Image (tube, rainbow, N blue to C red; front, top):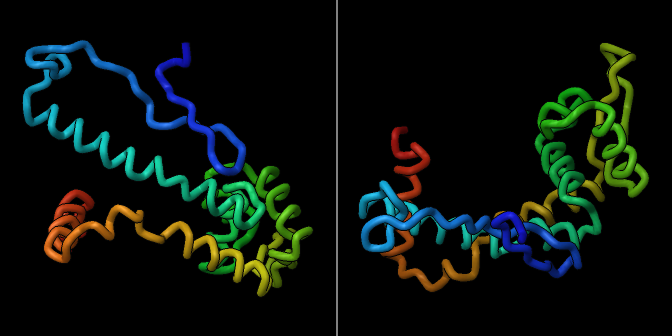
Length: 175
């Protein structure tokens, strides 16, 4: 038994969990118990959105193209915005400082990051992207922000409607 999670092999020869498939007890007309038609439609729609995102394995693609683990790619992307202290980078990556030190060491060995002493606090180290690091971060942004191929099948009207709906869901229409 796989705990309700389908495993999917990726092109990077790793195995990642796909969308969890935990069946809910069936109620009337096949809907999960206690779920009305609208709730069931929301669940089905959400499941399709998750599938759209998870089946388009951008993390695997960017890791394979750059030859870096995804956490190292995330570090590059955060540093693309601005140089950061190790503490700031740890906070951005939601991890601890010793692990960030390992990440930055590995990126520095590849010539993607340089570590310098903060001019205001000599105890503090600042991680800054090199030109190669900026190029790698830019390449990762290109891969990660590329729309899924299926979106090209939408008409201009459907794409505008989808954008409107997503603005509503994310609160972007409140501006």
